[in-house]
Length: 490
Image (cartoon, rainbow, N blue to C red):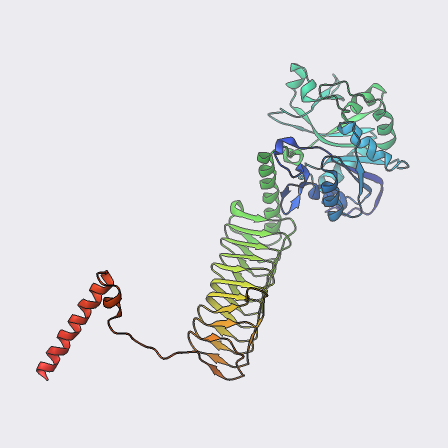
């Protein structure tokens, strides 16, 4: 983020009107997500960091869907509708009509170019102002310029014009300096020249780049700022480019957290959304995704093979091979391996959710443990509780969900089923295999054990000819022979 104060002389126009047909998607291109944000969201974040006096987003294709997303991210921006006249020049023209009295500098960005950071763009605007140019283009030198507009310079090395790919001659197409699609214009000059731009080109569009030639023809200075890091200019036109830009953004995000004091063992298999936060001394192990608004406190270890979405993880917690969404994991807790924390899970300090445990909409108190092979749904568990293996809180009766309440210092036997609604009092215990259908008073032992009954010969009588019947007969014959031998020696 830049440290700029409010810049009353800067307006940012974000172009988000394109259809993006190469995405092959019903979702508008600028709403496809990387790093936890839609593409346009990253550009809006950058515009906010520049502290511009005006931020305007031009929309057209899937207008309502894009506009709703934009205002949901940045309610303060102005959404402007492009009319039936196509082209980037017309998009900027209608944006300027929304701020008729503005006479500062206009920074034009594309909603599908999410990697241009505020620091780079602030330097770009400062360079434009220092030269006194009427327009400044961001350009880059690339090995393969296919698909980009070419920056054509005159014999003195000054920018003369920009030629789009489809309008370029073979000699122009061979130029490797490309137009990055980001510009700064002086507002008055831009307004005047846009009125002169026509649609006599291969695309029959009103090109913003035509302003460059018109400014030069009027004797006004056009400058170019060549970026060292060409990835800043990368745009998204198809799914392959979406993945590549997403990878670059993630690498940048991971590196930022490493420099801020987090240990990230394998950056290549770690994905961290730009909206997530990591404290110093967090350790992230391979194949881990830390997504959306997840916040991880100091000293916690996350992974391997873990996905956290909108979770809060406390200091020194250990979360291994776990999938968790909208869960609060307290300080000093352990979770996993192979745990599934659904929304509403709250694990207090010192607690444990163990192997093959699923939790949902449940509060697990301080120091309490659900170690393994359990389902805990719609449950409140007090302090110091230990649930045996195979515990189930049966919360659904085919009509409604009901809660189970388990008090402090309760110890439950293995393979217990708590049929909600039911309350287990403080200090109570339950026997192995118990099905708890009624409230258990504090300090009581709850049992639901029927006397065991053995029906002799059942397998041989009801499953004759099976391997089990053969084994049973063999064992019974051996036992009878042994009993006979003992009787003979007795």
